[in-house]
Structure formats: structure tokens, C-alpha cells
Image (cartoon, rainbow, N blue to C red; front, top):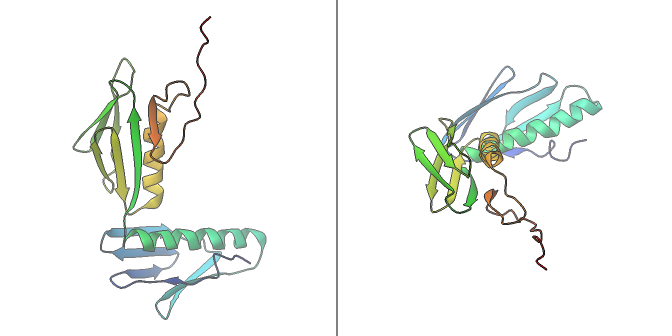
Length: 177
């Protein structure tokens, strides 16, 4: 029995949820999100709440039940309040430039690294802090992780791209005699 799946998902005002076959569409003030749901999970709207139930009770369906409940909850939350992640660029000469739908990173390589920004995300940069926001939690997290992976922070000086709440364990450098 899924603890997350059995809780109903409240639909706030200004939010519209449609279920057509196995497709769930959530539309709100910040945008529209669509997700396919496994046929093993039944999704229905009852009294302003989205309720998910497994078609057959087994281990796999129980796992899917909680997973899809979390996905739909994140979709409803995302179209009402945007998800936001911050990255900090640390290092001398390290910077990011955003022009149109492309972000250019100078992070100590012999070349610039260009990353294409997805259309649904809003990316801003100011003084070494990149802010990534959007209504799709999964896309915000994936784009943030891809950006961080360009130059992960190193343990000696802490140079690189890191999350704003990430703590880098620093190592002691060489000892001088």
C-alpha cells in the first residue's frame, strides 16, 4: 500500500486537470504540463481532488502508484508556483553569459562551453549565480545537473559550478617543508 499514492491531490483554484485515456494534462497560470500514466494505474477526478488507484494489487503497481502520485502532485504544484534552483560559479575568470536561448560558460577550459536552454525554462545570471526556474520540476533538475556537470567543484580550491546549498568538502593541499 503506497502512503503517497493513497493521499488525494487537491486541485487549487485557477488550475485545470484533464484526463484523456492514459494522459494527464495540468494547466495553470504558469503553463501546461502533460504526462502519460501507465495503464496499471487508474486516475480520476473526484470532488476537486485527483485520486489514483492501482488496477491490480501487486508490488510493481504499488511502486508505480506512488511514483505517478508524486509526478502529478509536482505538476499541479509547478503550474502554480515555479520550481527554482541556483548554481554558483566559483573561480577566477569563471563566468556565464546568457544570450537568447543559449548559455555560454567560461570555466577554465581552452574553449567556451555552449549549452542550449530549453524553451520552457527561464535562466538568469548575475554575479556568479545562475538561477534556473520553470514549472516542470524534472526539467529544471535535469538542466541544472547538466550545467553543473560541465565543471564539477574540485576539493582543493572549490573552483567549479556547485549548487547554492551544496557544501564542498575541502582537502588539505601539499605541505611545505
